[in-house]
Length: 487
Image (tube, rainbow, N blue to C red; front, side, top):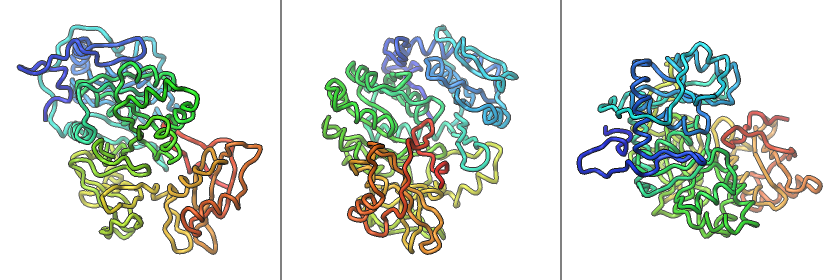
């Protein structure tokens, strides 16, 4: 495997990126030459202090987080990104489980007591170090990213260097991602989406990443208007952009000028797709991945941007749908729901210190995603929800919560919607809709919403109960936390 960062290593006859901007966080920026010097100096220190171990990274939305990541990867030391908002108990578990040799942080960052026993190394953004000549093999671990488990403490997914390179190169193929692209985003840097796709991705291509620090429609308009070509976001961000478009001509112009608008981490509601397309002429494309698999599918830039789908399997990804008993579903009829299983070089190696959980996650070579989907005749995949929370078995039917949510969101009196299943003596499970009304003073009636769904989908998919909330519970990536919804 070649270097993860070819633009940082001078090769005979290769392009010279040294004077090109690599990273920009607000008013702070580094060229490739400056990044190579700073990361090279830190890599030498990390390689000595953490040889054979791991480094924790205080992953604040700052220039130092990107430099620390690059330095650790150059040194061949796996990175354990830490969410600065993680609670004390969870953080203590992550530190004990991953046993890092030291913690990287920006100078001046205040670190919690759970990190007090670790040697602290402040990340420099200047230096004249040399980029190490050799890097570990493709199977060597690059990251240990902790997943938020639905039960028990988070598990550390060990992502090999092969998986990082495979996913990023497959996205290069699907999106025609090049050194000329300037990526704009404000994603958290302790997740796969923001750190691996959003920082390592542009640097592997030799392009530029501009991180906003904090998401605002104004920041998006400014950076796209100054030459940004790609935007990464989550549905919450695109929803705010859609709402701002009505009164912001500059934002509409900036989004229209972008080469690629990409949404991920959760499904983008159809109404937001349509509002953005109507105002800008530009379709948001979706992709599908998770911590353990990195990216599995995407709408291709040279394909049809079809709202409600996550596109086709990426190059090198094998994908199948299976029944509950493990039987493979051969139908591509857009109706038959099955669990997504994937295999390929993009997969994680193991859950750290959890051989039992690792074994349970696989069906032979196939990783069990726990995500339920249907596949259309042309190979496009549509996610209908998580097996544990979004597959509802009601009256003998298998129903995906996602399609009901999209229809509810299309009702003018609905601002937010989530759908769950609850035990029912007659139906097995009844469909429950959780609604945030557009105007709390005049919420829609349960009968009105049930009729709306029954007409758009089928009568058996209508909600049998509607509950109103002021706000839906979400995590830091904007995903609705359905396990927090209960009667």
